[in-house]
Length: 553
Figure 1: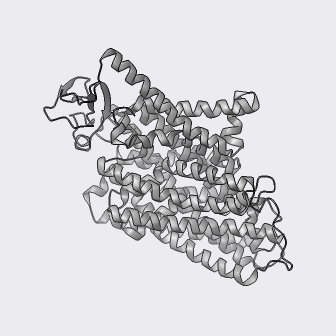
Figure 2: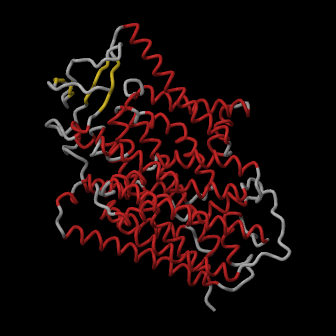
Figure 3: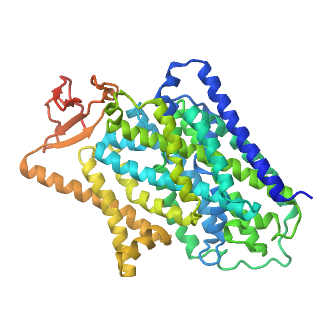
């Protein structure tokens, strides 16, 4: 009689490899067309305005979901000690999709203003300057590195617990296959493949849903909901903890921003984001609700993250191994689609940061070499795979990045306000982010009596809604304090307020070394624009002026 191990492992590997071959085929056909822009590093990283509606919709879905939903949603809802119950499940699922729509609307403003923007960190550079880009890029790398680690960790844990296979096997297979086709085809191959992976995922999920509907029945009489599943404190606070953390983490995910740059037009972007968000909410709720039903009916006999598998096996009491195999294959394909999104996004972040810091010029290149971008896909994955093998708790890993991005999102978003351009600048944004982190750490210290313990508790061990409120509010307070001090000092000294900004017209204007010139505008202390023409700084450190009318800020 076939076993789960004898079927799930080879079929999952086959599905992952077939989608990898599909991605390589798509890349090869695109290369044969000989489109000039396809051979540029910019297109490799952004697939600039090349993706139509349904492809971008499926890709948005893939960028925010993965095998983690199979494990993390049941764990968050039904954990025997910290379970957030059905309220936590609902809000976790909703806020899996809603951030995509928010990022899409913000992203449309950014790409209209900066048509050649490459990443969230690149936007920070164009609006606030290189120092802010370094800080923001580090947070983005932390965020996506942890997300990729969580994906590898999840698929390893699932195969170890359900299939009884060494977790290294699925991690190496998925990591190798995705690295190969992402390195060859870049973002375009990743996005187009997402369409087929997403449709495959939804199809297998529909079959699984039919099986559950036919075979599952609650005991009669219906058991009461235990406190960990009912409306409880953790569930109510998840409105804040899940809402703030998932929205902020999405803003610092270049996997989502890449889909914004790749959308053909505004209509495609907004509708695609809505489609992706809808599928993400549906899939996240489906797996979380499966774990909820398992706990409610008494089938949950494994650790909470495996609640969905307890449901379909009825607490390991039935012999329908085919449905278990189906879900393992489903999880493997979702894992593949998420992993390639993060691989491409990590490459985008590092490459755009290197270009801003003029690293290619040190080696005689005018732009980031395409081959270097492809090699980055591989090099960035090795340390992440090593960390993933350790098997850390998924939800606690996410808390590190959720809290960090919550300290940094509002200062960046304030930079989108034209009215605040003269006041919200790189210095105030940097101070606001660091001030928020210090405030959360201080709150942890007040609770625990020690900074080290407080930082660990608030950034790793505890989803505390108060900490997220402190992160948001103190980040705005920090920006306001820094901006206020600068205004006071400049008014006292009579100096104009300096605003660092790269305008869209300037982004393609480069000096002979290939370095974009920075447009610095000034405002007089009375609020009127300084009539001196903006300075353009050249690669040799000299400056000149361009005789054009100043733009009002």
